[in-house]
Image (cartoon, each protein chain N blue to C red):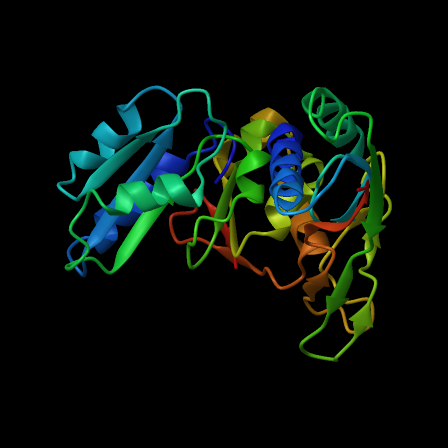
Length: 169
Length: 123
């Protein structure tokens, strides 16, 4: 989950790249209108289902249930579900997933976490993305992280090996 | 958000109940709305008034009872109100999952739901 343009598809793409040779991975891409995200992931030759919500601002368990019937579950260990870019409604609709990851990028500004506390309270993992743009955006990654910790102290910061993202879990 | 769909679910459930009872008119529907459910009472009332027109619920009162959040801490067994984030520049203090006693992470145990508590009617 995350705002429009926060980097959800890119993150899933990178994770699929690293995991697909180890076990069966599939991806459900929620998108209001286009299949661009699903097409991008499908290039990696993993099962992909595009869930078009048209005017819908979030996925729900029913839509995910329908997507599950479109793929062969036998060989799968992990399914990534990309929700619609939106920091409000998706928080309200549990999809039956094991864990929830929220991606927030510094290009969304300094106050995304406190503006959308419900979304972050429900997150098992928060990823602060595009930190290389923090200086240009005049956004403090530390303050953004501090906001996450204020809501949920269990999240701890781990600088990611790629240095381009900052992970909290 | 999505108060219209919540209001229609409430109205559908009440109408379902009326089907199996001899009811002339509904006077009041009472809801319990949890603090953590993020249901917006004002919007819910507006939607309720709009969709109950020309039904047995027309002109009935929607009473909303606010259910405060209760959290529990798995590490220190604190149970009670959550700690609020008062200086978040928001319109109202934001409930957090930080334990007020040990600063660990709490889990919400009450205040997540939205439920119909009572229906008052004339037979």
